Length: 146
Image (cartoon, rainbow, N blue to C red):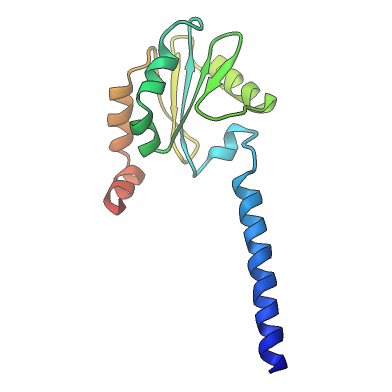
């Protein structure tokens, strides 16, 4: 009887510890672009200004964005807007730095789950981005399993 009590108690403690670890991990802030690797695809946009329409375009495609595990960031010059909240200063810095280091005509970057830049474009064309993502081997596997 005491053996069952000890085993049950250990199992309960283990379950509580694992639950706390899971909750802590799920609530962890994403502080760098590299934190998204293998979890999300990224779209980084350098907007001409806050009223360029890119933010509204991305917000209006929420279902398609979510389906493809996309996190997007729009640098308006004065701020970085995203579908993730809140953004750390180091994450904002990563976004701005990567956009600045990109070719001068590239205002839109698509980064795959592997962390590699998959495309550099001069304007935001979500249809083309979605087609490019949907042709990726990892995405094809995701669509088959869903």
